Length: 302
Image (cartoon, rainbow, N blue to C red; front, side):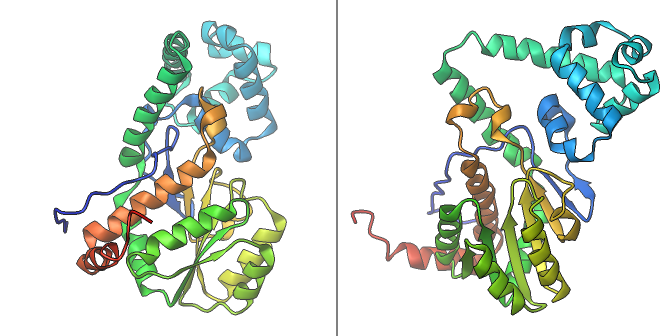
């Protein structure tokens, strides 16, 4: 790894609740169940649920204490399904079986009870610290390396943020400091225009929290038909847009946090791109030198 002293990185608050899963064409990477809250894991997989899965999930959500006290057979009778379905559900969300899921859920409830006795400020600070640590542990460096090389080899690179217009500008300006021109696209018409002219050496990084916009998925399908590379950043690993993307970077919802009222989902995006930016300047000396050059022109007093 290339690294030089002399530059201090000032990342934005690194918010990424519980986990970031990266996968290509359905392949998950760096899954670490110990870092994920059960509810966030279930929420991010809800697009894949069957009707039976939804029945089990609703029961767990509304009758948590009862869920913890019953065995698989008893749960099957109460929920109106089979014990095998209950066990399969626990395995679907990443546990070896029902017992492991119940143990993890009970431990999680104890932690939340402990947190609730603290002030709002201390809770926010505690969650901030955990999130900063988690994003480093759960983001695959090999995938970020791959993104860096793909950006470097692309003729044109775009950042698509239809829901968060300011985010695209911030990301574009950040990477301009190392000589990378990432074109911000903040309207569907602009995306359609550039998409119609896209080529095989173009790259589109698309932020879509649900990934289920029919209009967006239609445009992305046209873009991939032209051979362009698509990276989707989303809350869900299975969606209309995910199915046609080359890489999906999965981010969780902020509304699952205790401090969700004061945590902006945009901070998760900025944190992710801070990590990507850091990879550029620590792994490639040319980008590091460019940052030094541009930094010398910045007047902090303006």
